[in-house]
Amino acid sequence: MNITHIETIPIRIQKKPSLAIVSSLGSNRNSSTFVIVKIFTDEGIIGLGEVSCDPVWSGEDHVTSSHYIKNIFAPLLIGKDPTEIERLTIKISNAIVGNPFTKSALEMALWDIFGKSVGLPVYRLLG
Image (cartoon, rainbow, N blue to C red; front, side, top):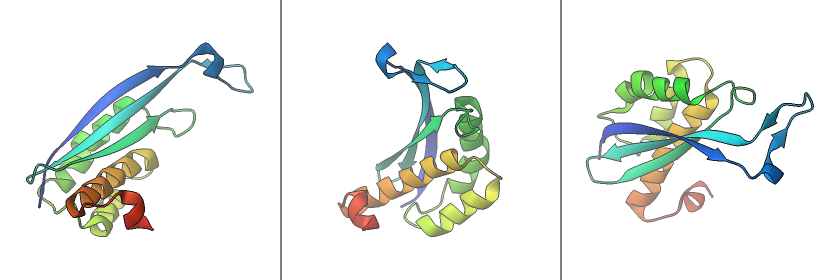
């Protein structure tokens, strides 16, 4: 099995006013931004991952996350076996400094592919 391509889908979710996040500095955030990551394989399996994009919290936003996935990480991963999670995670980790939420989304998608390929939920694979 090989990775054929990777897509990113930025989404913004509005929060109910009662669920808005108010910081101690008084800033009020009534929406959250995420990037959904889809890793496609030549066997038709699609792995899903998610980046929580909040520059105040993670230092990452949907623009930089999508950019790094498309331009840095995808070229490293396309053509590789997605079930070689440890090897690919090292490549992802060494490619750029920081951006742990973006890197985690890719690892999530790799685990999702592996779980789907063996017919087990990820929580079973991880123990």
